[in-house]
Length: 318
Image (tube, rainbow, N blue to C red; front, side):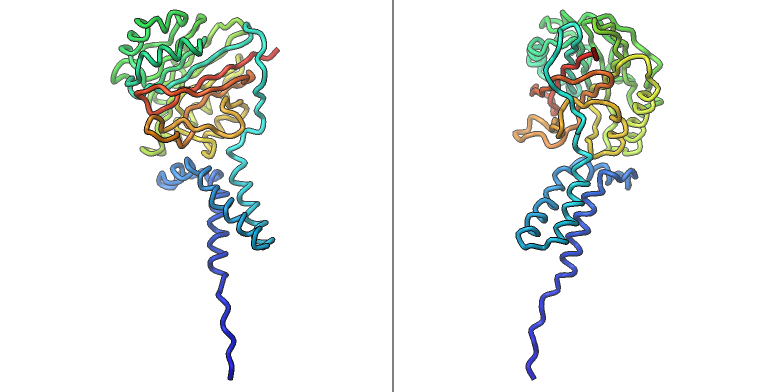
């Protein structure tokens, strides 16, 4: 009696591929920490999207229409959280209604002061946010005439102190010393100032959130604290600038950014780690604006830091 050769069983491989694609698609929507592993995976979720993308192409080439349809749904669900579909970047208006911002994590004040001074002169910001900075660095920048146009500032960032972020401004400012203190964020206190810009008063918060690679609970607490603070602001436009240690695939960051326009455009731009001979992998340095329109964005290398500096131009509503 002749026996027919058994066909290879494709059930398990196809099922495994579908489950993996589904997991990648829903990853940006998982709000639990998973002992810290979920935020880490979410940080690299845009790269994981390559898997369902390749699978989709293979499925289409093999004319596996139902299989490809499921993969396409998972791919779209996973990609959408990374997109900023409401971006309104365009041509700038009058100088009086504009603000140029520069934000930079100076990595424990080890960045090259000469390069940073040159960047400040080149971008000519009206508001400068320095994270992981020090008063020694500020004295070096002042000695290079980089802070001549930025005569107003928030409180000092002493070594070993409760804050490591300072906001400089061309225009007069008033600091809110009781907002976003270390008890709220679970880590450093974050400076908050009201800047008297020609286009109107704008509230600026310098951001440095605890990284999820350490204590993910403290990371989540920091994002939630900034989110709660933002929800309570009603009087002025708001700018959040600094090192968020978060990407768009993190639900906590997207909740924080609700109602904000992100300066880095439709698809997130990577800013970390920089200066290691390779392009940065993930975008954790952001400038967010609410009640303002973003009209420009750029990123810049400064040696001595593993972060790119980010610059944005925002415009007051007419």
